[in-house]
Image (cartoon, rainbow, N blue to C red):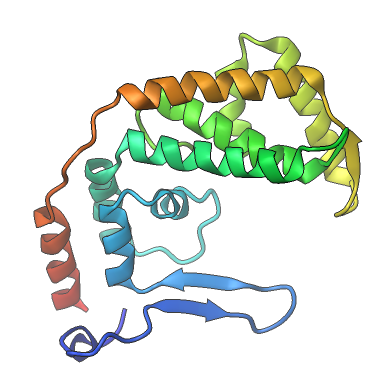
Length: 207
């Protein structure tokens, strides 16, 4: 957050944070107001950041009411379509040959399982990939293949490839179709700004 006058200026100033002090650390962020604008649009990154399993400093008088606010502005249809769009793009770009980069398998599996999580729970999916695996506990063959890939990924080099796994490819295709069909039936919500504006003014006055 900036000083109060920054938010009361006529001109729009830079609202992104980018910190790269060295090759190992890459910090990205948004200004508080931009974050809330994107939360209003049910941007998936806002939910992912607030569910990160790794937390450094935390001011709970800020984060607890902010997480409560995210529950009101989570739109299942919009976030599902976002994840399915990511998976579609990755499949079209990276899954054209017999082999595929190991990590890119998870660039598809993670958003597909995230969409499936939303179908089942109507809430933001967890960031930790392992927390998504219970979704397929009734599909042991699929789960076993994913676990195998995870173990390979742990010791693989950045550019290592594996042969495409037919059972996983079919699972991805079928699950994407299922989730997409469900997403199409969900209503579009017209959200109000009131709760976000109240929270914004409250925090701004405190700071």
